[in-house]
Length: 157
Ligand code: DQA
Image (cartoon, rainbow, N blue to C red; front, side, top):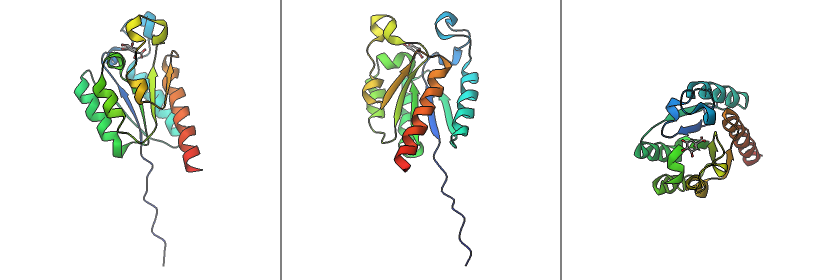
């Protein structure tokens, strides 16, 4: 009898972006550069594809929506990349949601918060993350995809 085709598809990598990141490109370009969020999405999609992954790329200015997106990732994501933007430094709700994930979580920032104002030195997201990549602009996202691809390959092996 012919074998049934294997329909198991790898889950996508979820990439979540928090408040004000929709305005990248025009928002404080001296800090965040001139790359738009759409440019970041395009580059992430290509890099993930080169490792055999698809992505789900999302942005919200609302904390509750970010929590709901993270909750959905519990069963729907191979890994979670999260740039929670300002919520990084304030949101226990985002941290609690991240703690429910069993998939790898990478905290991502375009800038390096450790070099900035004191209030940016606290990260609630870091407490729920596998690791953090910050300070490399668009490349922070691409390096996070590299990290996740390596982690998932190690898991499979
Ligand atoms: C940011 C850093 C945060 O401190 C800030 O609130 C942001 C962007 C970054 O990507 O560098 O909105 O997450």
